[in-house]
Amino acid sequence: MFKIKSFQCKHCRGQIQGRSDKLFCDDLCRVRYHRENNQLIRVKSRVDKILQKNRSLLIAVQRTNKAISNAEDRAFWLRRNGFDFDFHTHVVTLSDGRMVIMCYEEGYILDGNGVIPFSKKNTPTDSTPALPATF
Ligand SMILES: [Zn+2]
Image 1 (cartoon, rainbow, N blue to C red):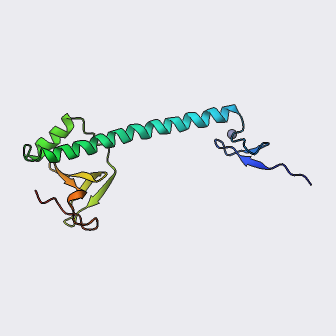
Image 2: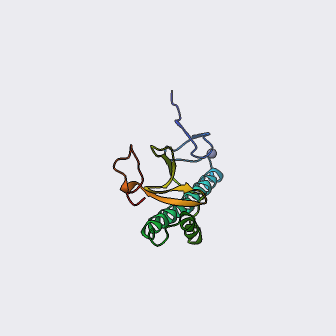
C-alpha cells in the first residue's frame, strides 16, 4: 500500500502533505512565519545593542573611576551617557551578600543612589567573585 508522507508546517504545526521539501501549509503560514521571525530578530538586535552599550559604558566608567569617585556621580554619568538600567545579562552574588548586576563580564553594585563598578576580569575566579583591588 502506497502512503503519502506528511510533514509539520513550520508555522502552525499542522500536517502538510506532498513534496518533502515543503515547509508550510500555504503562503499565509509562510508569510506569518517569516514576519514573526523577523520581529524576533529585530527585538534581539535592539536588546543586544542596549546590552553592548551598557557594557561599553561600564568599562568607560571604570576608566574614569579616579575622576568620578562618588557612587552617585557615577550613576549620574552612566545615565547621562545613555546607560539603560532596565537591561542586564545576569546577577552575581558576592561572598558578602551584595548583588552585582552584570552586562556580560562587566557589572555594577547598587550603592544607595549610586553605583560601584565591577568587572569579572578583576576577580580571581568565577566561583569567588570579589571587588576589584581599587575599591
Ligand atoms: Zn501552516
